[in-house]
Length: 193
Image 1: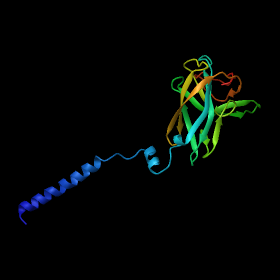
Image 2: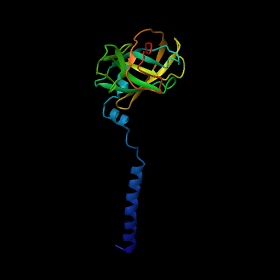
Image 3: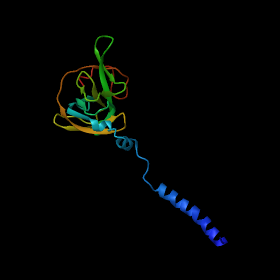
Image 4: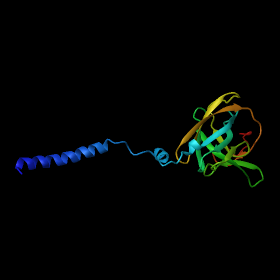
C-alpha cells in the first residue's frame, strides 16, 4: 500500500465518523414527558377526565371571590389528580378548596392538600359546601349569563380547559381557614363563595 492510499484512508475514517455524529445530532430531540407517556401507551390524565355541568357563582369584583363547580369524570384506567387551576381572564389567584368542620362546629373552607383525586372509572363532584375551585381577587364583576374559561392542571403536567357559565347562587356560607391578608381574605364569612 502506498503512502498516499494510507493517508487517504486515515483522513476518510474521521470524516465518516464526524458525518455520523452530525447526522445523529440532527435527529429529533428526546420526547417530552407527555410524548413519552403517549408512546408508552399511558394516556395523559387530562385526556381521561371530563367535566360536566360546570358553573361559576355570580359575584362582584368588590366581593373579591367566587368558586367554580361541576362533576369531574375519569374514563381512564388510571387515577387522575388535579393539582392546580387557573382562570386568567378574571383572577391571578385560584386554589383547589375543600370544606371541613372547624373546632367550633362551623364549616371552614381551606386549600385541599394534594389536590382533587379522581379515581379511574369514577366521578368527583365539585359543589357548594364541598370541594370546589376557589377563584380569589376577582378583577371584574361576574354577571349571570357570562362565561369564564378555567384551566385544570394535572399531576402529570397535562392541562385541560373548560368554559363555565356564571349563575346566581345563594348559600354554602363557610368561613375561610387561611391567612391570605393582602389578598382580600380573612376568617370572615364570604357570603357563599
